[in-house]
Image (cartoon, helix red, strand yellow):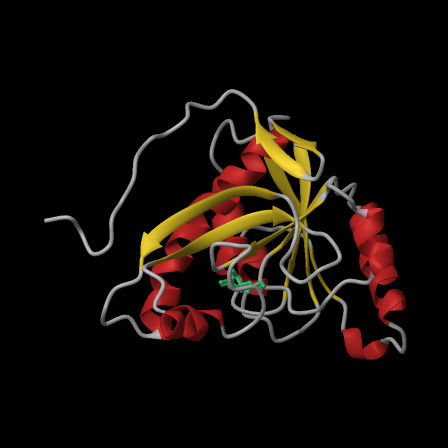
Length: 215
Ligand code: GAR
């Protein structure tokens, strides 16, 4: 069983998706601990419900960002964590931390990276007029929302979408692909070569969607 540590700052719906997936028989990973930088994070309740050890490490208690990261690292090490999942964790890690967890630190982002990194992404997607958006799970590197892509899901942007409706539909995709990414990693099927991910033993899809639909 791969031991996973999940880092959150707020709602924690992706944490819940990971906890629920890990509770399924045969899932090859377990949630070893949850860390929040905010005591008020709603997602902490999911850890409590599932009896997963949860820790609050307040970033404001540290003068230096790297000291905060070292405190997080110590808790992860104490739980024997092998893979970190960032799930709405709203602090940027230091290069020291990113390097320490190279290829063992993943994040999820609610667009089709490398398009639309950063914040306020659904507003930007709608404003751009692009016909598709989606979600991406990737290995963290030092740039913002930048790193080898593990998996993605896509959906059409609808003519009457608002940032909120688009965010809600994409969140449902996130809850599917984050557990899938963890499963693939835990099964040893994600190989990184020249900073690009290759997934072993999967059936290629030639499906496509058109938006607006053809007929
Ligand atoms: C998710 O939509 C996630 O993709 C996003 O924060 C939200 C957290 O929701 N992350 C980023 O934008 C990272 N750049 P959650 O707390 O309910 O999981």
